[in-house]
Image (cartoon, rainbow, N blue to C red; front, side, top):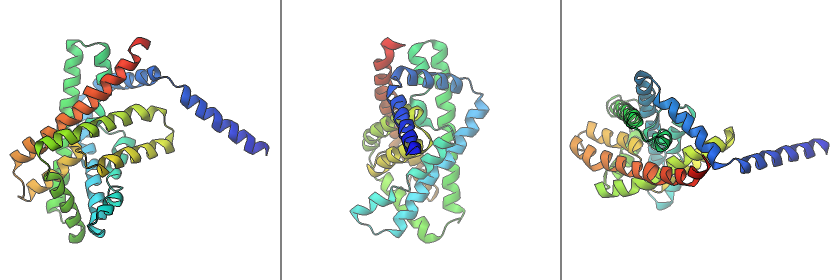
Amino acid sequence: MSEEADLDRDEEKRVDEYEKVPSSVIFEALRREGDHELSRPANALWWSGVAAGLAISTSVVCKGFLVSILPHEPWAAGISNLGYTVGFLIVILGRMQLFTENTITPILPLFLAPTRANFYQTARLWGIVFAANLAGCLAAALVLAYGHILPEARFEGILYVSRHYAEATPFEHFAWGIPAGFLIAALVWILPRMESAGEVLMIVILTYVIGLGGMSHVVAGSTELFILVALGELDPVAAVLGGILPAFAGNVLGGTGIFSTLTYAQVRAEI
């Protein structure tokens, strides 16, 4: 009984500590992380970004695997999108550079000191990481399209997912990218409060919602578009102008324009 009581008290203490963590403390933790990211060498950012582009492609692959074995029924999306969470788990737990995470982390130092130097550092970080993510996605798409590394039946599932993503109009990618950007920024904000098991669960829940909701994530979606480009099913200009750039704009608006701005507004008087 004594051991059970001690465990209960420890659990209550953890809950109390969780609830007492003020938003200003989370803001400061993310701001310091943002300062660190802004100061990292370009070479380190590039290769971490390439690794993230490759790793996030496993979301497309795993979702495609599940699609390939499930019937084309409305309820099947509730299962197949569990596969969509895999790449995000690898990238976020592996601390790789994913562009959509950077719609909040390096922005917080910029909010505090909107100087020309900080604008330059943020633009540098965004440019390197986004280009590296796309390079990783392109490499993954080429291997998937021409490497014959998967059984044909499983690759057909990946093609089905990719074609479905490419059917959206530019405006739809932009509009559907807004909630995706918001949720990824929210995830970055929440994770400092989480313990290991909670961190995994939160990543799964929020990225599952992005997949299930048919939202547009610029990096994961780029792999899908690049696969179709590699196979000659989609024009490269259409992929960039009709898919990648609209999703990019939507993710930035949702992550930086909405979530990060609201986050700064709620702690501004406390910092």
